[in-house]
Amino acid sequence: MVALIAIMAQIGCYVPASSVKLGILDSILTRMGASDDLARGRSTFMVEMTETKEIIDSASSKSLVILDELGRGTSTFDGMAIASAVLHHLVQSTICKTLFITHYPSVAEAFGKHFIADVQNLHMGYLADSRINGVREITFLYRLAPGIAKESFGIECGRLAGLPEELLLNASRKASEMQELVNKRIARNRTRKVMEILAQGLNSSESSIIIQLWDMVKSMNINP
Image (cartoon, rainbow, N blue to C red; front, side):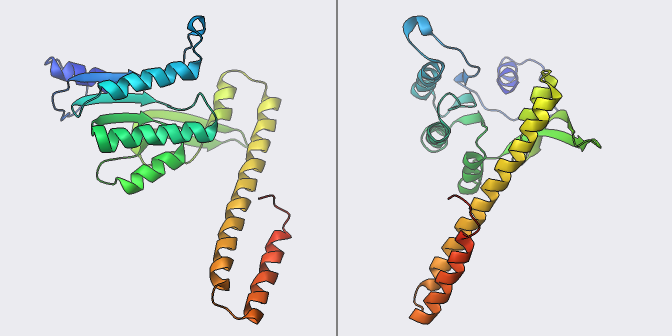
């Protein structure tokens, strides 16, 4: 839609928006969807990286770049690192208009904090309603809202696709368990950092107390 509005504006056509302020663009470069090229020995991720490379080589400060879920074709940390590096390049080196869709919240949060004047985080607005049996109903509003989406809707998407309800309920329980485990690990890491800071510069008796407190935390039986 953004690319379409840019094209329509530049040819002097009616734009379906209340207002648009957009300079002249020399190109609109997009990388969306997922496809492979196995006949040439190229995986989905290789195609994704090749197209991204072509965009980086072609983009200028007057380009509009649209990247959709960059990095999803590889492991979480590799994909997150590539997504972050590419976005950093576009924001700081190319300095072009960019629409960057990502499922990596930490990437979005980091750029929202470090590039406050240049980066704005938005998400698709929605309404969430829970039934008596705990099933969550999501209504997407098809309009942008400020900030990062705080929830994920993979299970709801599976329900729309017709997956068995028993399977979805089991998936929902597993998701809650994993989220709880992650929260406990985050709390444990924060506690460890605080105790390490407190232990610095203390005498042996005071340090012993800190060590005992840390042993109590470890007895919570949470794997690091």
